[in-house]
Length: 146
Length: 123
Image 1: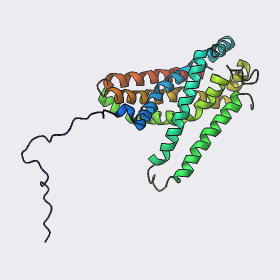
Image 2: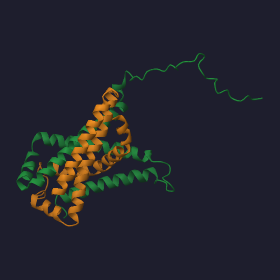
Image 3: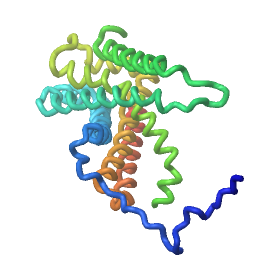
């Protein structure tokens, strides 16, 4: 006949703190592609922070008037600015591909009575919003519409 | 400070989430035109002229949308950047300096956001 489980069956033989291994980084972490990708994803924070301040600088130049705005656009022709903007674009695309891939997997099973749409549909909707907003902004700022 | 950071964690997560979502959706269009297209001469003449953009900002309805998008383009990436950079530093060096680094990064994002609001209102 089965006995009821003893809740102290796994207790240490002598009272005292249970020994656990201290948290350690695995020695081979820099060679792990997944870990490097994860760190690169975190590191895009630097690029986003700089990009936010760059857009703030552009808005402040625009607020100052036509001369400041023209000077800002002229300064953007320098190789350093071009390199930064290209790097920022690459970072944003990297974040988008990774985040929009993770987002559908991170949804709860239910939000109240509603269920989130199926993962492939949610994924497609995110890409549609991303591409749509990019095309719209390019068309407006590029002078194609408005 | 740690208690305060834990209390405001939901707000920071909200801004971080909005930053990673809306910042990522909006930034490519800006970078492709203002950051790369115009300097490389790929845009039509006058597309980014002050007069044209000023006309868009001054529009009663379109101007409001323009300002809101500009505010999102500035402030939200700052919060995404601050929060991700905080976690990058934790991953690299542990929690030792987080009590100093986290408030500093969030302060930078907050100051940038206030400047963004003031700038967008003054356009």
